[in-house]
Length: 390
Image (cartoon, rainbow, N blue to C red):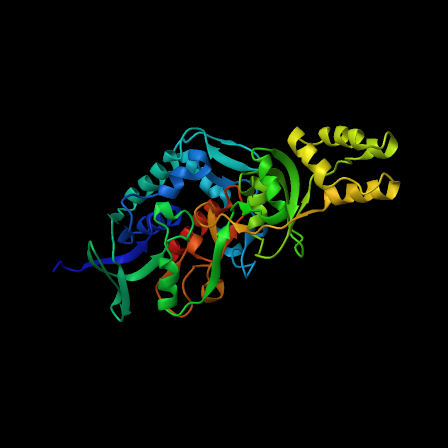
């Protein structure tokens, strides 16, 4: 039997949060082991942002995150801001650019961010251990004892950075939630977030417009949150930034509401001029792609050509309900909403309130960012909070 290896800190999960935490703790002089059940680190980093990694957002703020406790993320996000990570990127001479809405991407490849994190881990003399299948963990007065296919380890502190359920082809599992439950922490029910929505029934005819994209405001009833971005119709339903954003707020059985032409008056020419189907189509084509214009003429035409009916049609186009039948699930979800209940964690350190030395960071926690680099910033911030505390 292999001898037990002793560390100060064991970090479970070699994704964005795990790498950042291991590097932070290691550079404080802690002896750190970074374990992952997969063969390689940072696989989700490499596919993010179309392979260019949207590594943070200039406009990062606590109101860009969803959690049962909307105040929980404030502490970590203030201690390690987007400017801190931007300084680190500049230190490594990684060229980057702002795409839209404050989103920062590498000019070339996401490998640059992964290499940065691995270099930071090397500075901290972090020991990397991969393919750690069949992990079993227990705690006794001597620390956290870990048994896995690669050996036996013990550490005073353990940081769980195992992520959520999104993108299972990259090895995502619910291990972090199981571990939290093992140690008595509560879980906010996980669900796919930043995910395309499905349409069915009478609304399945929208899928005939697959490939059509248009600017909309997307919201859900009962929330003041809405997003003005592009909608993309798919062969199964709806996607595009506006839909991905609102999907994090959408709950099964709810409709979503679209303003199909934010800040534009669509039917003014019909109201003031000719009133017939040809005039309606012409007005629609001035605001929408042709296929969408034709579709809206079929499904949303005024009942009559009176002033009241045309004005009602105008209002309907700005408050257009659709009724998703579901989402495309974790297979297509960029992140997982829900996770370890923040009520069981200390906001400044990410340590479990009732289990000394146990920390949870990143996506496994019930903190979910908007689309556009916010989830990476939460990974960096929560990782640094824990890395400074272990």
